[in-house]
Image 1: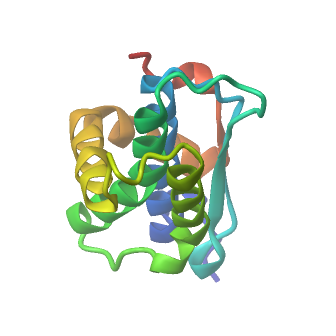
Image 2 (image 1 turned 180 degrees about the vertical axis):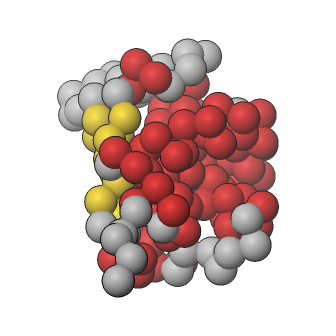
Length: 152
């Protein structure tokens, strides 16, 4: 029997790309993050970027792009590596948060979901080399220091 290696788990690698895309987006929007994690394997993989509460969000659009960037990151990873994308349900919490924030910040009239998705894909494209470089480390170790995320 072969021993499980998290660094080669395709779902874990895609989840790492997802979380790194969020982290880079938050950093670009000037939002503090304290934790970047990936846990589980295969279909049970999940992760998070912890954003402490009580922060003044100075760039609401940038924050929303960061929320949407996770999906853009895992889709690009899957596409470039010939994998099936992570199930859309893995982004349900992200999309719920985006809809809630659009309402709360009264941004719906200024920013469509489509426009934010395009901006998220652009952010991922601009920072892809950083994401690709950090994915194996996050997948293998399950955590990454936020200090490893390139600043704006």
